[in-house]
Structures are given as C-alpha cells and as structure tokens.
Length: 440
Image (tube, rainbow, N blue to C red):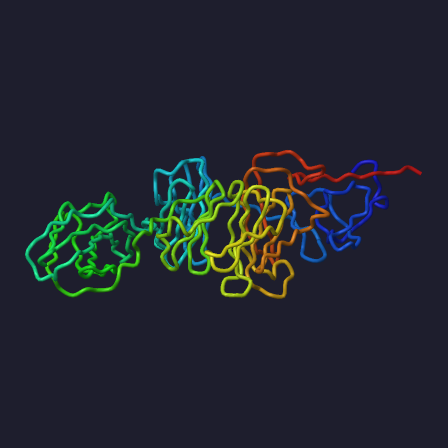
C-alpha cells in the first residue's frame, strides 16, 4: 500500500462484533448487550471465527447443475436427494450431480414449500400440490372426493324395511380414503335390497377403489358395506354385515398453499391471502371446510412450527405487517402479536437453539423480518432479534436461508432479492479497506 508505512497501520487479531453497518466508521461499535467491540463495516469472501472474529478466507464452490429459472431448492436430512424447480418442473438433484424429473406442469415463477412426513415429502406452490416418496417417485397429496352419490334403485334382498342412507368414498392403493358429501337416501317400505347405479367415477388415475357405506334402516350412522373396483358403475347391496363407521363425511381435500408445515399431527397450509388451513389429525389430505381455517389480515409470508411435544408448542405466522403466535387446540386459536413486523417470504430456516448460544438444543425458527433484522422464534412465542443495533439488511421481496456447519463454524446464510433499497447503511456483498493517515 504505497505511501503508508507499517507502523501507521494498526493490527487486529479479529473483529468479534462481526459487521456493523448501523454506525459511522469513526464511531465506536456497541453490540446489542451494550459492550464496546471491534467490528467491520464491510467484508467479502471471508468467514469470521466464532468468538474472536478472526477472518479466514471463505472456501469456494463447485457447480452441481447448470440450468435456468431455478428456485425452491430444499433437502431433508433423511433424504438422499434435494428437490428444486427448474422451468416449471419439479426436479431432484442427487449427490453425484445427476438430475431427474419428478413433476412437470408447475408455474415457473411460483416458489414451492415442502414438508416431510414419514416416507413422503408434501409440496405446494400455492396453486398446485403433490407429494414425493423418498425414492423420488411422485405421489398424490390426499384422495379426491367423489362428485356426488350413486343413484339408488330398490331391488330384492334381505334388508329390513325402512329408509336407508348410502354414500361412497374413493380409496388409494395406500389405503388413504377420501371424504364424501351428503348421502343419498332410499325408502324400502317392504324391505329388500339396493342397486347402486351410475356410480361416480374418479378423474384421477391415483384412485384404485370405491368404498360403499350404508346406514341401518331408519338409522343415522353409515357403516362400511362393500368395496367396488374403479370402472364398475353398478353394484348391489342385499344384506350382509356392516363394518366401521364412515368418519370422513363432509371433509374435503386440503387446498394448496404458499407455505406448508407439520404441527401436532396436522398438516397446516398458509395461503397467499393470509388464510391458515389445517388437516384432520393424522389425515394430511382432508380438512373440514368450515371449522379448520383462520383468516389473518395481510398476505401470508411465513409459517413455522416450534416446540412440538412441549408446553411451548405453537406456530409462528407472518401475515402483512405483523408476526403472530398460535398455540393450543386449532379450534381455539387466538392469534397473539409477537413481533410488530412481517417476514421476508422464503427466508425461514430451522436449526438447533444452541447455534445462538441457548442451553437447550431444541430446534428454533430463523427468518429475516421485513424490517431487515434477522430474528429467531422460540417455543412459547418469543421472538429474539439478532444484532438489531448493529446490522440491518436492505429491503427485499423474497429470499432464502440455510443453516451451514463447516470447519467448526455455525452459520446462517440468507440471500435476498427484489426491493434493493438500503435502510440507511445496509449490508452489501463488497469489502474494502480504507486507510486514513493523519500526517504529523
């Protein structure tokens, strides 16, 4: 550095406060605890060691797949492949860099949200929905409902006299069952049997069977009677034993959503307009259209579950300019504002609380709030801003986050897109060294 002698430069072993873009360069850096620490105004391609903040050159990267219009990259620890969208096709990326198609026909610009439950990954982009098995095979998310009930015709048989109700459901090869609507009725004043005519046929090839439910004479509870193969449009009930009761009546398939997550045995969907919908317990494809929804004001920008199985279990939901916490039985949800800002869509990531110095290693949620501050959400509904007195990000309309562990470092990496306006001093991906010399 021409004109500057070594003795004029001040050596430092590290910058434990990291980046501070909230203060002027000549101001003393104060961290969120009120302590004076040395900080960097800008940094590029360096990692700062935990604690001392000693800079290390950041490692490079290797191209895994070259494509266009790619987004929504996601992977669960138990999966051997990652999922992403490229040009409107949901694709899978193997560790060796090979790629295979999973589901075509998606909207190219719609971000996809994922949730893994057992051996199945559920996905939705707000318009479409589906599932992927852990071997990469596409699968349905739930079973479609029949479009009505069969026509009922009196026939010979051994049924007692009275009025009967009949309803059908569809079934999948996995045993998953659909909902159904109002049952059809028939009066047998002298007893006999019932012929089912014009049985509604499924439009989806995923449906493998039709299940028929029948009530007792003048009864209200429908019970399983017979199973009918897909394609057969007539069937006959003349008596016989009854099986288990119909428990999916008046339930409907889960709608697609902008974000999805599993919480306390239910699958939750947050739609773009801020409507939260949840499935029946352990029935991830069905919901009650009247009793299983909650409308929040503003757009739905974040959905995160924390504390499952503990007293602090609940959901963080960012809608519009507020972040809410919902806990307890969904039928009794009472949204509580826990942060006076919304969230940047797509920036949610999950990681152990120990990453942030918490004694409990229980998983917490991290996201970038709409005010440019990274925050973590903990069980019980607490929202903890991170370094809000030091670092603020520029405005953004979308983003993505990940938790990274390497060389003993724990890092949360967030990328932001859209917006682009700085909030005063703001984070930028550039680094400069400024040397100020005061001549004697």
